[in-house]
Image (tube, rainbow, N blue to C red; front, side, top):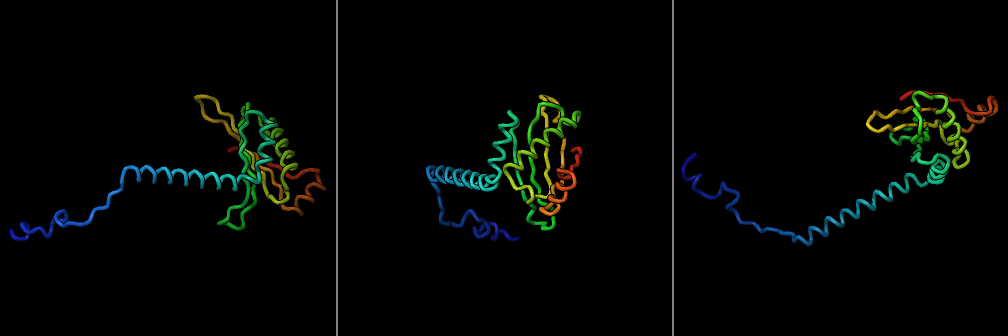
Length: 172
């Protein structure tokens, strides 16, 4: 490279004059505030539409099991059309569900009965219940319980044969 290249101002992008756009501080604050309101509103609308059908059931669980903070979710993975339709319940309990599985099964029985009052269980294939006990400064103790509900025809056969759908449990 010759000296005249380095002395010319063509290689230096700072030397070229271009119009600068400036945003005032007030505009930036208003823009950030509008973005925050938009994202909060979007999250609220999504969560309301997503959990809305389960709200009465979730409220009934909260009344039946005080301090349990139940969360109810349901449906089918849209990307995988052949997957089972699952009703999922996550809630806190005041006992160790890994050590006292019989008590956990009783809680799941109660949840299934309450769900039958508020939802059409024939539209779900499985009921997944996650019970957890949070002990301060220790690992969370959790247990997953799965009940196979089946479709309407399978569920009716199970009710006719045993009076209740098939159930199974597994640890998480």
